[in-house]
Length: 249
Image (cartoon, rainbow, N blue to C red; front, side, top):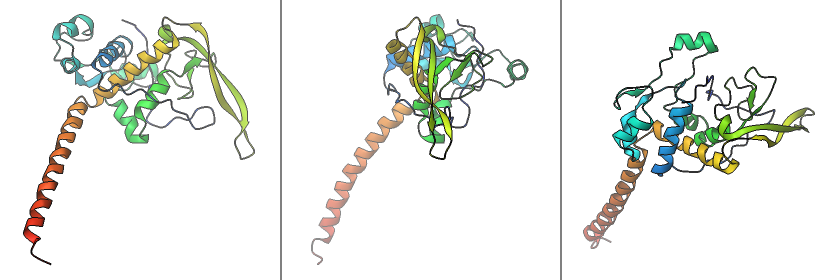
């Protein structure tokens, strides 16, 4: 279990990076991939659940993505005793405010919250979690391209490694020069290769999406059946209408 202190993750406003509008990287859609969701759940429990709760999510819902109750107990049940319990943490909000200045937010519906704000919830999360870079001017030593002056340290740095951000001064069209992000440079490799880390973050984002609406897959499937049934009913209704009105000109 990684014991890291996470602060002020996922603020409720759209961040702008270094004077320009943030470019969001497209998050792979793995919402229907149970294996990816299982890997994302493991990452969430090991790297996020120390400080961030998911207090509207029960451990036993993970059986919906293919895990057995025994697998949940063996691999994921660190902050609870029974699989029917909620994904809560022991840290109290009042204590967190004293220690960090703000209580780390609950992450159960963070993907849906982001999506409701700007329609790009998964893309923002995917960009944010991959966008940390070294900045010695920050108290934690980290900054983020998607959330400038973020208060949270880079919880996944052991996996990604350390990267620095390169900026250039560019005109903003109003006679001002602003700092514009150009690229990242990996200066210290992590445990994962860059493409492996991107895959891991995609799994984590998929799990964050799943927590926000565990029944999303079922809802979409039912929606397709409903549309198909309505299409059949439309054909029958139209045929009946033609039969009733065939002698009326």
